[in-house]
Image (cartoon, rainbow, N blue to C red; front, side, top):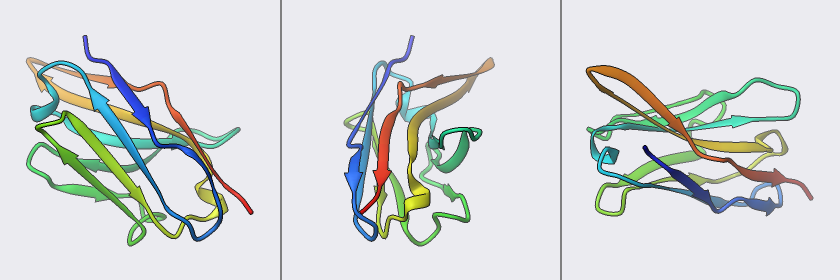
Length: 118
């Protein structure tokens, strides 16, 4: 069983920055694709960014050039550096771990609130 624990959310003014962290338990981290998703009130959960075990990254168009996803395999941790934050970035941000070993599996963190407001 994998546990994902997010941290780093909070209230920030427009134009500000936050860094989210997600620590994973177990030994699957290094072979997994890690991702960040977000869900605003009344909306579906959407992809923000992913990073593969080979460090290939993918971003939603809405965050390209502002957010950076990275991982530290020695610490079993994935990060999301969020810059130039906008009010529309307000959401609960969820960490996701996906891997395939005979079958595909995924795990979710509990979520961390990010609020961008003046």
